[in-house]
Image (cartoon, rainbow, N blue to C red):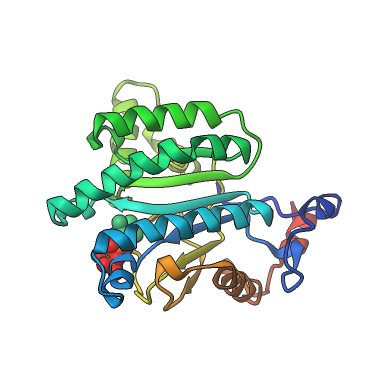
Length: 268
Ligand code: IPE
Ligand code: IPE
Ligand code: MG
């Protein structure tokens, strides 16, 4: 899905916690984040990389809370890529244990905050105990009414596209689908993000200027914001800065005029 439902005036009072520096009518519906720089953060402090990953969890909890409070509809974060398996065994093992520990510890908070969590990626390759926790967390929060929180774990954009193409080919061979009818909507419905709006804003921390195999299809028209801040240092001010920058952008979607979310309401 490509279009967002922007804030309507009657919703404005519900999001009174939006900082006054921001325009409540121009908040992104969906923010994606490449949480990068944990290792460098730890190294700069003379600490092992694992400490950086643990500190990154605090930054994530804070960011999720702020996005939820400020009325952002969905937050999608890159937690572990299909390429991250190539890191030393010790680091991969630490990350898997960290994911388990955090998920166990935070489940009640997620429920209380009405967060709807889901995990995008090739989950069967994850440790069994983590898979069980993922299923449990997804089920227990599926009826919640708050922010959608997608955690990309063993996620790769290319793998997602290949799987979508493979599924369409199988359905065509089975006679369920006329391949000549495949269009962007049918293709997008095969992706892990089916039913989600595309991210309006992509934030990458730690100054790297690349996508690193994240949401290759979905980021087609996302605004990109890169900050030198390392992920564990990403705080309220950092998010505020990213959102202010986003709200100053002119989104043209290939057209000529700026389309503001307000105008889009009238066009839809
Ligand atoms: C991002 O931080 C977290 C994961 C990829 C799991 P990094 O671990 O990539 O940190 P840097 O880039 O080495 O500083
Ligand atoms: C991207 O960060 C993946 C995650 C944040 C989970 P990386 O640190 O793996 O990306 P590269 O290797 O610098 O491109
Ligand atoms: Mg990195």
